[in-house]
Each structure stands twice: as C-alpha cells, then as structure tokens.
Image (cartoon, rainbow, N blue to C red; front, side):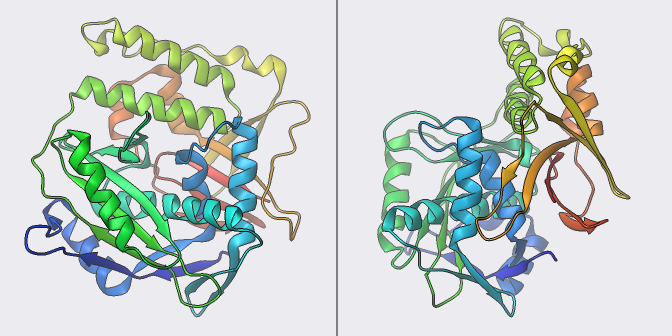
Length: 344
C-alpha cells in the first residue's frame, strides 16, 4: 500500500520589499498547491533525497543506507493524510532526518512549481554560505534554492537564507523552501520565501552538461558504474569542444559492464527499467521494522538516449508514468527523470 499524505504549502512575504515573486511559478500548479497542499508519498521523498542529498564523507552505499534508515525511523504515522514524525533517540538522528526530509520535500515542490524535470537540479558544492541547489527552467534561466528543515521556529532559518543570498553574489532568483517538521504533534508544513532578483540565463551547452552530470549520479545509484564513468569522461570531452553537438550521436559504448554482474529487468504496464546488480549486492534495506528492499532502476528510453548521446532527445525527455504505483506486489516510485525506485 502506497503511503500518501498532503503537505500544506504557504508563502511568507517579508514586507516591505521581500515579496515572493510568484511569476516564475506554473500558475495553475501554484494555486492548487497553496489551496489544497502538495500530495506526496514517503517513497517519493526517499527517492529525491537519495539522488540529491550528498551527505558528508560517505560512500554511495553508506549514503543510501543512511538516507533510507534515517527517514524510516523518523516516520510515526500518516493520519488522515497528514504526515506525523516521531520523536527519535538523540538530537543527531533527528537533525539528520529533518535535513533529509526537507531536501526531499524541496525537490518535489520546486519541480512542480517551476514545471521542471528532476534532471534540471544540481547541488551547489563548495565552502562558505551558499544556497543548496540550482535548477534550470525551460527558457534556460537559472534559479537557486535553499532547503531547510526545522522542528520549531523558522525565523532564524529565514534570516539565514536572506544572509546567504546577500553574500552569494548571484544575480538570479533565489528561493527558500522551509519545511516545518514538528515531532510527535502537529503536521509537516512547507513555506516559500524570498526571491527579488534579476534573471540569469544558462547556455544550452551548459544545460546539456549539467543534465549529463545528473545522470552520472543516477547511473551510479542504478548500479551502472561504467555508464557513470563514460558519462563523466564525455563531459570532460564536451568541455574541450567549441560545440557540444559535435559529439551528439557519438555512443558511449559502455555495454561490457555485463561481464562483472547481472542485469535485472522490471517491466510493468507503464514502463520498462533496468538495474545492474553487482555480486553480493542485496539492495538497500528500507527499514529496521520490516524486510523491504529498495533498488534504483533506469528507464529504458533514457538509458538508450544516454548510450547514444542524443542531446535533442535528452533535453526533451520526460518519463510519463504515475509517480507511485504498485503492480504485481512491487511498488514503483518514479521520477520524471527516468530514475525509478523499486521496492520489494
């Protein structure tokens, strides 16, 4: 059974000159979100956090294991469509799971508000005060976003977002997505605050390379380590070219990956996807409370586009499947980027 809940979404305007600019949002989606809330599933938060949350000093396997266990241990219940979080043992666990949930909710909400594919998001790496992610809209304009989670007061978090914006030097729009995540009592709630900036555009070549970086990360999650390696090599080659389209249609040729593992295929009425299973790979344990296992799979069409390096298809690709569904006893949580989390 898929566990759905509804997260209230609100705007925080900080008068007199901190009004949230809603002109960049999809108007119909925005109205629906602020009136009816954001419908989401626990699996979709886990999927988004697994892809976009980097963590510190962890291998890929350790990162996914910590994401899944931290999130599962923080869920108390879903009551009448409301997300209720549990009081955990130790502030470290609570702090980490609060951060993970806020990242998942931020990516889900921003994807819907701005009408963009998950493959348009990239983490902002570096030191010092900075926003967490940036995304690229269909008109190639760049938006930076910050994901923050708090159990109680969000006033200090709002102040921190404003401070990061002031010192960033970035001229484009910057939004804060603040998740109020109380423990034991009260439901989760997401607040949006603070843009007020001029737009900044990205070139199409830069967009292609950032999408390829996204899929290198996704390929790692899905076990396609050689595809990830080849994509990263291709990005280096593209950086040396004056025109990225000179390498469009030049295949990656990563298929000798089959020699050191086995392919697992998932075929449903909505999609076909594959994961690559290395020896002794048991998948990711979702919870200490039961024996559910998760794997990440790559939908066939995007896998083919990546292999063939068709950049026109890459730019237009969107997986058109239900975000979450169950078929033959298996749960699928699908991102529009073609990354599918399979729970058995």
